[in-house]
Image 1 (cartoon, rainbow, N blue to C red):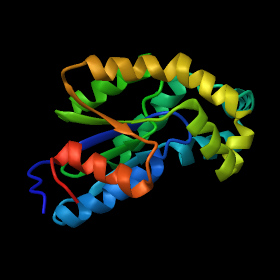
Image 2 (image 1 turned 90 degrees about the vertical axis):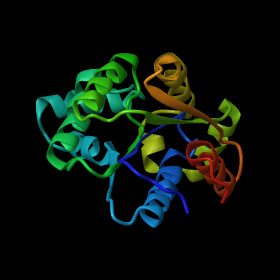
Image 3 (image 1 turned 60 degrees about the vertical axis):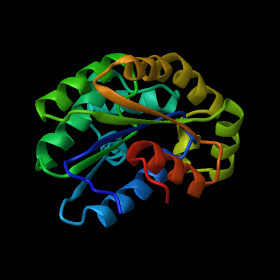
Length: 204
């Protein structure tokens, strides 16, 4: 059993269809099993932004236009969403698992200030590295409504290359982060094992 002695922070990042949500859930289960005295806070901003876009305000209308064109939301909206979630819900001593945030580089730099504010040191970045072909196959097979509404798959992969890849490079080169590159083109179980092996130096 892994000896976890302090609250850990994890950022899952990678292209659409790489399995971030699935692996985040598996890690949460692992943390609960190995550190039952400490809670886990899962920061996933998708539900909040979807509820926001479903409302009838002027800002929501403009946000829906971005969404329907397959564009990433502007940084100020993304920051507002996850900032509000953290401020209202984070207690301080729990593990923090972040799925899909940050995306753009400027957002990443603001997110870094939040981590410093909450005294989160040695944040683990879990980069699920998969090819465009792998992503396309996964997105096509899962057929989620979100995928269809977001615009075609090609657009999603294009904004990943344009906006998210620079963020990944920034996180990789910042010594304040522990960067773990994971081969995402494996079975779900194999990817989970590789994450645990690299983060906790443990074989499961």
